[in-house]
Amino acid sequence: MLSEEELKEIQEEIKQYPYPAVACIDALKIVQHHRGWVSDESVKDIAQLLSISNEEVDGVATFYSRIYRKPVGRNVILICDSVSCMIMGYESLYEHISKKLGIRFGGTTSDGRFTLLPISCLGDCDNAPALMINNDHFNRITVEKIDELLKRYK
Amino acid sequence: MEIPLTKNIKPGLVAYNLEDYRRDSGYSSLLKVLKNMSPAEVTNLVKASNLLGRGGAGFPTGVKWSLIPMDGDRSKQKYLICNADEMEPGAFKDRYLLEGNPHQLIEGMIISAYAIQASKAYIFLRWAYKKAEAGLRKAIDEAYKAGYLGKNILGSGFDLDLYVHSSAGRYICGEETALLNSLEGKRAVPRTKPPFPAISGLFGKPTVVNNVETLSWISHIIENGADWFKGLSLTGTGGTKLYGASGRVKKPGIWELPLGTTMRELLEDHAGGMVDGHRFRGALPGGISTDFLIEEHLDVKMDFSTVAAAGSRLGTGTMIILDDKTCPVAFIHNVERFFALESCGWCTPCREGLPWVEKMLASIEDGSGKMEYIDLLKFNAKYMGPGNTFCAHAPGAAEPLQSGLKYFHDDFVKHITDKKCPWR
Image 1: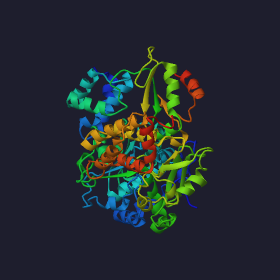
Image 2: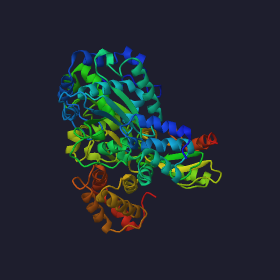
Image 3: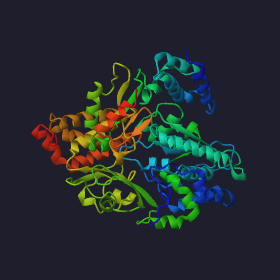
Image 4: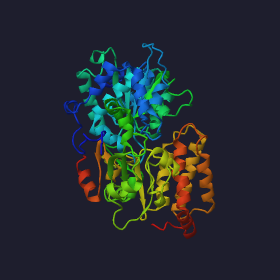
């Protein structure tokens, strides 16, 4: 079931559009904001609210890379793996983080603290390599810098 | 040298606020337009300036606007959309403008919306641009409070509401018709053209989609005129351009320079040349969906038509430099893997061709590639080219592939005959 808060926020989005289905992406983002990811049950709840099929909602949810259909850790590390960051050495950065946390891309640490994912270009190519942790953006990342950074995220 | 777009941007500092913007004559162009100009006069001025779209395709902005039906029926809904979904690897120019001077974009959008008589406008923003989003939302609030947005703007009778839509992440959202589907809450697959968005766009209504850098020009063109704009470039096309360079250069960065500045000047004078011990081998001049240019092209003027004549595209104007310590096959593999992952799957050459290309490149890079792959890669590059797909995604992917195969042929062959990557 959608919480009252989620419902209220989704209704607010629906208001600005010509018909409810337009709010599909907003609704998915709202649910993910509250729960960290989007479950099968939430897909059904959103579909019912917007008067569209479950499949339509799931089709949208699985299309966009920043909607998670599986649970993720408390913190999500997104490493840019695009070409400018490749030239500037994201691969060694990735190997370092991967070894430190014991997970590869797509994995979550057993304590649920970190999920590690690749992300395409963050628009910071002149300060490569770049990465994000949750909503925070970092650039000119070195192995020393990343060790310090990770400590901040519990 | 004039740098109208970036003169008030202080990198690393907070966005230029309304008070500062107004002190530097911000919103005076809007006032001028609402007081003294008809929508058609605005469109004609932008047409006369020859402002070419800065998103990469270089389509004339005024012409795009003039395709919007203006039959005088003001009850008819029309939309203006700013494409701020900058997601082309190697491109970082819109982010600079969004973070540095949001009011410049907002003023440009209000004037542009007036020109096509749109009463609703959206900024379709890249999900990851959190700092830009916060700055834009604050600036839009300021603009509403100051009466530049909302009902009856500055007493003119013109209404405009402006919304920020933060995306959910997919490169294809930057394609103009896929963007429209995404704004409608659907999967971002491209639409068949025609009908063009000017006739049937967002929710089936006439819609103009323009890039951040394009819209950021509008207030300056209103203030200074078409001839001034044309005089800014070295090639007569008009305007300056945000150029950038990334890769192993001494000073990677972004610079506003006259349109038509040569690649050599960008590389040597602005990017400071290659990092010591590295040699220039080539560059993608405007993001990863453009053909490689190599040493013999260094004196090519970086303008739409001159770069096209050299066999590539100006694209976003932000160059990615390939150096001799980076494997060109790994470089091209990285680029094609991105395109394969980001294909929306809507049409066959893209959905099937790109993963095939990616696999062949991966095996060449790891030493298990076969000589026949080179011809197969060329075949795929041709098959994914213009005319075979709904949108420019696969044709864009074909550009670095076909030119890479041409200029770095020996490197491909060496990987295959040595059964390993010489760089690893």
